[in-house]
Image (cartoon, rainbow, N blue to C red; front, side, top):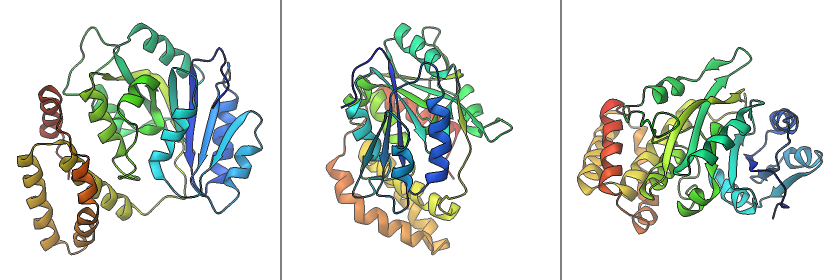
Amino acid sequence: MIAASSAKTTVVIATRNRATELTRTLTEVCALRPRPPIVVLDNASDDDTADSAAAFPDVTVVRLTDNQGAAARNLGVAMCRTPYVAFSDDDSWWAGDALAEAERILDDYPQVGLIAGRTLVGPDHRDDPVNELMVNSPLGHDPDLPGPSVLGFLACAAIVRKEAYAQAAGFSPLLHFGAEERLLSLDLAARGWQLCYVPAVRAHHHPSARRPPPAWRRRAEQRNNALITWMRRPLRRCAAESIDLVRRAVLEPRTLMTVAQILQRLPRALAQRRLLPPEVERRARTLELAHPRS
């Protein structure tokens, strides 16, 4: 477990086979003042990613024997002794004032379980399209909260209250990668925690060139969104999405692979089925009507 200190926030990074990108990220994070504790979870890399991280002093590196995907972050959070955890990807890092601002907000708003920060992309600091969606969230901005209410976030720009994360059981191992933030958002809200977009909390994202093909990512998100529906939503919603997916498979044979992956994982998803509270279901439906998934 990470040694106790006066720090309030630990930075947790999950990585795999991105030694160059991770080195840059750790250089940026280690330059933060005050420097936060840092935990790196290496998802069974077969290059020198873990060794590159271990070269940084006082960075805790955990070498996993298998690729646990997004759920690797759960071990990092469990090791933290700080009340707050800031996630970074191996190709993203926090602005110099971001952690202090997030700590101030989380201290002042004990009902907030997660802050979704503003993601700035590349050397020209372009706004990620998700920023506009969150600032104009159809869930509105309660005056008693520090920003618009959201029911989703980008993991590379999220700071979470450890207590809330533990109650929601973290990222689901079943999903591995793709839309994993959506399920965690629903589970945090189901336990009464607020999620807010706070643009003053900024993260820099320089997307790695070593990324899965876009088609792979789309299939993973399509698969996981279907599984999340079966895990948390009413049966009528499950039926509607399943019928739509079958129709797509008829028109797009490539979707058959996605259907096969869903069926393979469906028994485990159903074993974890737990309906959302009515208010959270209403909010999820509001978002779907405002931003239907393609």
